[in-house]
Length: 108
Image (cartoon, rainbow, N blue to C red; front, side, top):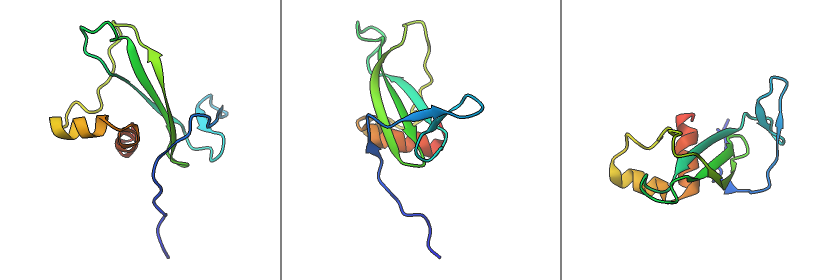
């Protein structure tokens, strides 16, 4: 018996979600719970600080989408990469697919 086949994360801007019976967002294809994460790209002093990236992904199908979202300055966002060494943090943050993979492994 073999284990599951590893598939790379694939950006799929048009993938669809639906609401399950409990009002949670699930993947329309595999019915896995959809996960999401929002992060800031710019420093607090930047005029672009409120422009953030919102990532949404399906761990079952291994597809994700990312979009620019507005988050008010006052809203504090969780930083999933905060505890990492600077070099690792930078490497993960440079690639949406790497970031989604990291977040999915953490269960974020």
